[in-house]
Amino acid sequence: MKVLSYNPDLCVGCAVCEETCSETWFKVADRAKSNIRICDGGAGNLSAVFCIQCGECISVCPTGALSQDKRGVVHVSKKLCVGCLACVGFCPYQAMFHHADQVEPFKCVACGKCVQECPAEALAIVDQDQ
View 1 (spheres, rainbow, N blue to C red):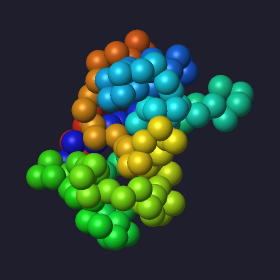
View 2: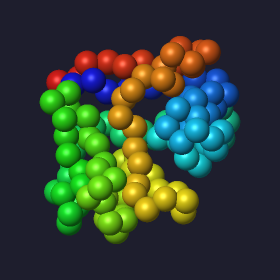
View 3: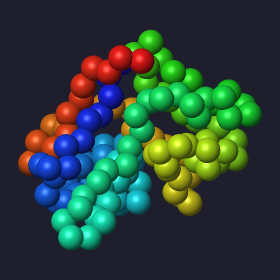
């Protein structure tokens, strides 16, 4: 399974990944509409929040809007989602996001755009056993 990987030792907190993500998926430079979030815990302690494709959210969706593809990536079906946000509240990694501008939640799909743009090479797409 392909997943996003983050190295906090290399991250400089520039937010290029967040901006790239929001521009790629939402066509706006709005970090609140990013599928990855860089968090500053203070004193240079940076961390990242993004979907690790665990699939645990799938079972809580009452409409079947969440599914895992053959690569192991979890997707949200806009056609089936009713915006109940059960998945957002359930996600054990807090990696399912919501923005008031849209009904359905959103999450990382390991597309790799942020990896390509990260100037510090703190992100990678890696193979992970399920």
